Image (tube, rainbow, N blue to C red; front, side):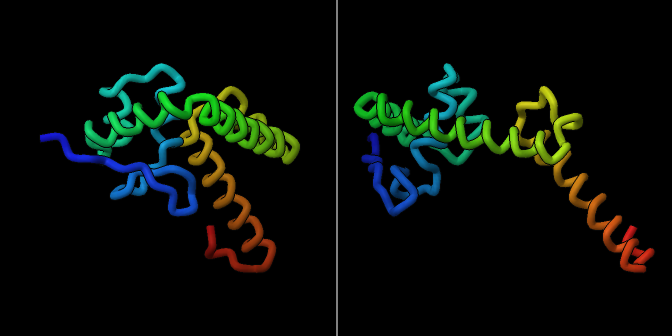
Length: 126
């Protein structure tokens, strides 16, 4: 028996009623041509019934979701440009994976904190 899955909006945009995943979390992959198997690997808490509910929602709201996705991509593009202006571009050039970018930025943050601590006389912070 298929359970009814509802899409609701608690203020973060449309999301699955009993799950913190938003429609945009799933739409990101759908819009880029990913299938159920790939999406389930990326979002393992997503059930097949929930996926099907999101697909139905996407079918009804495709254009507004595409526009929202474009706004999100523009936000990320501006963030990458800002990182370039701050001189991080050499280490981040060509890296599109958010996980890889995060790891590089985290390492840079730790490096800057250690330099600041050393300037302040805390040589143990290395």
